[in-house]
Image 1 (tube, rainbow, N blue to C red):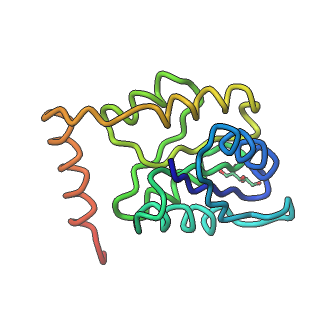
Image 2: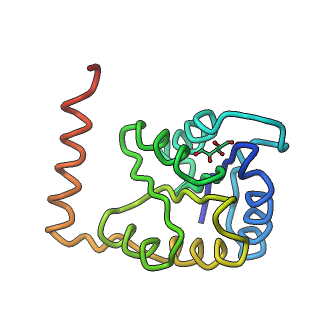
Length: 151
Ligand code: RB5
């Protein structure tokens, strides 16, 4: 699968470990940065990952910051992005199956590489259920985006 990944300084080292893991599992990785652990701003990398997903250059995105929270808030500002912080495998699976989550946010100051790897493998294996009730709810989210565009 084509995966876009980004981090700020807080997530840099975990991102590098995740990239190695993804490549070992034969995924194609688009690394949008940061390319070092000098202080940087997570909204820049959230935007870069989101852009790859929205333009169809990547199927899913992963953003790592200190907590996962800032990256998630920023990514969800981009219409069409459905990002969530998941530090457990249940949420990572259900977030895709029910909510069509397309960006996973992780906190490098919260979880370690082993749990990150498990969460990512569940996130990438999961598929949206296409169930009518979930499509209806996603339609309501899309309507919210539309209603507040340009305000
Ligand atoms: C940066 O220090 C930190 O605020 C950032 O990585 C992230 O945790 C924000 O949510």
